[in-house]
Structure formats: C-alpha cells, structure tokens
Length: 135
Image 1 (spheres, rainbow, N blue to C red):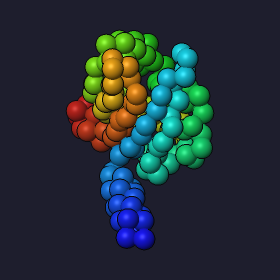
Image 2: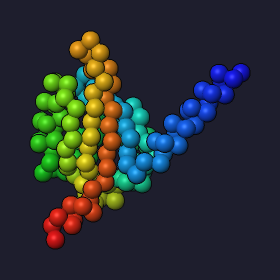
Image 3: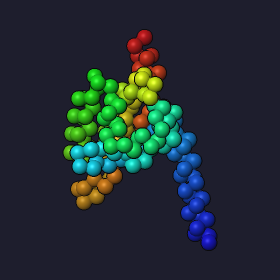
C-alpha cells in the first residue's frame, strides 16, 4: 500500500513537472522510415494549436515544417540519428492557424548496445527571440 502511494505520488510529481515547462516535452520513435511522436505534453496545443491526438499521426513533424526549412531539418535530423548524436537546432513549424512558429528543438537519443531505444526532446517557441533578432 505504501509503495503504491509512493508510486502514485511520484507520477503526480512527474506530471506536474512536465506540465509546468513552457515548452513541448516529447518522446518519439522511428517506425520504418517514418517518425512518430509517442508522447507530447499538453503545451503542444497551446504552442501550435493542434490537438494532442494529431501529434501522434505518422510524420506529423515533417508535415508541419516550413517549406524553406524542410530539406535542411530533415537532413540534419537524419545525420544526427544515424550517428546517435544529441542535437539542438532551429526551424519553423506551421501552427493550426496557418502562422509559422520558430522552434528550438533539443533532441536526445537514449542508446543501449549501440541501438537507439528512445528519442526524447523539448520544443521551445523562440518566435519572440527571432523577431527581436530581425529588429
């Protein structure tokens, strides 16, 4: 009974932590040649406007990249994946209302026995920073 309460308390703490971050916490995997999110925090709806269930669609990420960033982002992520290299990069994603949001993408690969077990990351909206850089 005590272990169950501790486990429930730990899960609640974890959920509060993830939900308090002003960014999209995510987990995903490659299924064949297609990337798919397996977890996306609630901030995804606030930042890009798509319901969480849409994020779980196959290739959601690549389908919402800005056309001018598409080739660069795909090539960079593919090379990092093949080399198992954690990375940080910036690109734009199309929001549900049609505008483009600048994203800073921090991705980490969990590797065991030279095999990627998990892909986890954090998407932060950096649109305000990018706008300030233009001024």
